[in-house]
Length: 216
Image (cartoon, rainbow, N blue to C red; front, side, top):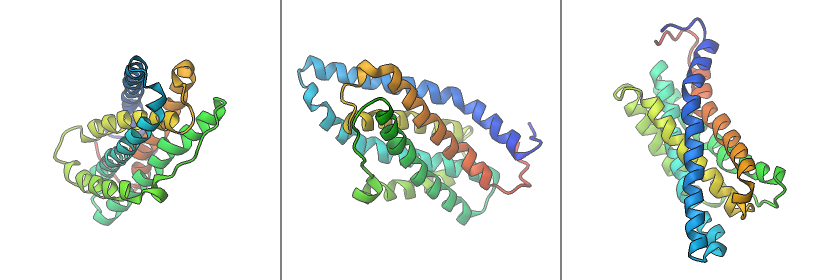
């Protein structure tokens, strides 16, 4: 379909991506619930925060990778300027993934009454951030016009990984007994995932597209 303006296009894309986002958050919580259950069965729940830190440093760079793919692919579908696409993909993934995986969970944990720690991977472990962003941007450039519905697939993977990363950050840096606050964790994770990820994958790249875009 044709869109009358950029705002209408952004609203349509957000509505199309939102169900994937909420579903992915719930799947991420179920996965973390199973892992917590297994830790309790093994009487190793005291090791869960440390194990969560290790897993966070796997899921956070994976989140950056998928975010860079989705953001770059969304931009390239509408505008073919290579350097601009690289900048949009790189900036969108690095900055907004930090908001989703770190800042939103940190402040969400504080709101839930927990004493949270701030941990910035881009400062402490830059090698876990930049290589994944670079490869993700390159992948986004390649798949945008070769794989049908590439932005939906990459966004779904992005949101799922982001939801797990957000919960892992909560568990790792302050919210150790997260299951008894599952309702609050769900709300925090939805906000931490849906808003930044949709901004990264949809709003940011489409706002950077030229105004004369006539993509269907």
